[in-house]
Structure formats: structure tokens, C-alpha cells
Image 1 (cartoon, helix red, strand yellow):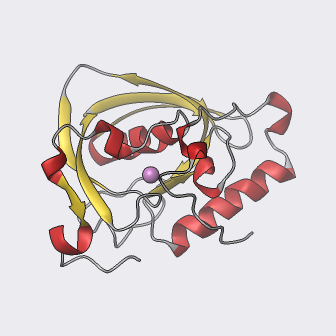
Image 2 (cartoon, protein in one colour; image 1 turned 60 degrees about the horizontal axis):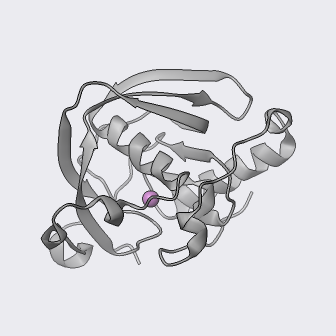
Length: 178
Ligand code: NI
């Protein structure tokens, strides 16, 4: 277990499609070590979630939820989730705008449209099936984190770049993060 350094926007690793977790990796000590590193790093940096490529591991594994991040004080709580090889299916076509940040884009926030209602499927680190239908902030975080596994960063989804800026200017009431 260790706090890892974060790969930042500009590194081509964040633009790659990550490799799926292979069947023989589920339940392995190496995969649990990766989960533990992600937990330590997410908690240290107060992230709402984190994906393996953000610590330099190009694999389809992300974690999110499990504690209330001071970076998102108004957000609802999400159960702690380890999600591998996700498949996302939007439910309906309603999109909602809200502010997002990302540990790989430190110090910034932008307004990103996301599907309000979402089904996500995948596996935890032991290979147990996950199949959830979620809404709101939970759906947003799942979409943001899974984007990391397919080479997408939230600034690539911003529709109006006037709604993209520095968090200490946009939201001076939030704790400083860098
Ligand atoms: Ni992110």
C-alpha cells in the first residue's frame, strides 16, 4: 500500500484505452495491491474517485465512493466501489450539467454534461459481478471514472469553455487542493 504520484493531463497514457483485467488477475494479490494503492492515493488527495491509469497503470480498474470528499461537500454519498472492465449503458437520454474536477487536472473545475440515469456493469477485484442502476452524482462519478479507462478526460466533454476555470477563483469557499 502506498500513495502514488498522479499522472496529469498531457501524458499520453491518459489518452489510451486501458487493458481489461484478465480472468486470472481477479482475486490475485497483485490486483488487491493495486486497489490498495488507489485507495491510499484517493484518500490522501480527497478524490471522489480514481482510476488505475491516473497512477500510471493502464488497466480497466477504477474505485470511487466510500467517504465524503471535502472537495465535493454538497455531494451525496456513494458506496465504496471497485469496478473492473465496466460497461456503461445510459438509461433514457436526459443529460445534466454540473461541475467536475479531476486529480489529473489539478486546481481546475468545469461544467460537464452527463447522463442523469445510468446502468453500469462490471466486476469487483474478486471477479464478483456488479450490476447497478444509479442516478445523479453516483451516475456522474461512474461516468467520469470510467472515462479514464477509455482515454477520455472531462475537459474533452466540456461544451462551453467559459465554464472551465481555476477552483480557487470559481469556488473560493472550497479547501485549497494543490
Ligand atoms: Ni478524473
